[in-house]
Length: 227
Ligand SMILES: N[C@@H](CCC(=O)N[C@@H](CS)C(=O)NCC(=O)O)C(=O)O
Image (cartoon, rainbow, N blue to C red; front, side, top):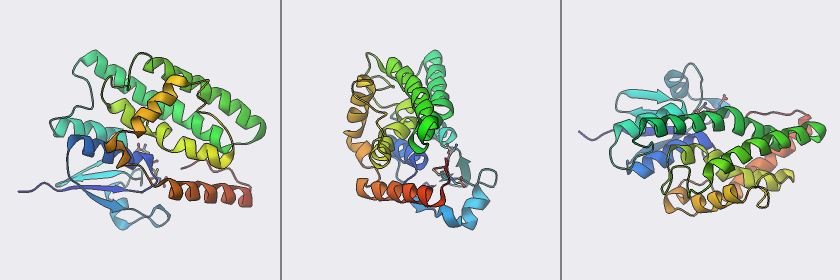
């Protein structure tokens, strides 16, 4: 019987792009279901009643939520391309960097992008500190996964895909080639991979999305940190 693999996501979401990229690296065909987060579908609420968020992976009768949990499920379910290394210590280290990106680095980068004035200056310093930590981890390597894209690269798409465009919209420079040459070279290398290109949201649409977000923030004078 043919497998049923579906991804509920949103075109702009780096979290659902993670899942798509992992499935593509594994060579697994899937059906993509676009979710409207402004008007969440009964299916999303049924499949992810706790977080009510995308992405959701549907594999035959199984439902898996939370992107990093989904990535490990994908790695363990389908053979071939490996997202995590073989060695238990290296696997532990990859999971450490995944947590660092999601819990420390990305929140700091996001706040630096969308805050203003003194708060922004402070947030940018914090974001740089975390980005420099990632830069150090990349020293001597092409990807976080070594010679090939691994779990950490997939998770770090957050930084590679959208930050450059947000910088353009809000007029800041976090991913500065002089400050972070290794990280900037990693972004270039990652974004030039064909499989990654297939997962990139259209640049123009992303630019329009973030422009509209900026205007909404200005109009309502509210700083909404949620993506
Ligand atoms: N920790 C979650 C984060 C996913 C997430 O933030 N998804 C956003 C879209 S990018 C969402 O569904 N937001 C809906 C909401 O917050 O109500 C994961 O890694 O899957």
